[in-house]
Image (tube, rainbow, N blue to C red):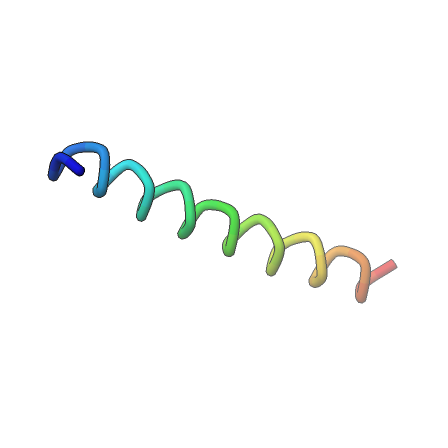
Length: 30
């Protein structure tokens, strides 16, 4: 796997983690 693709995969993983934390926070607030 190329370095660029690896970086993109890591970026997507971090983004999904952020999204899930945001969603759980919002659901907790409601």
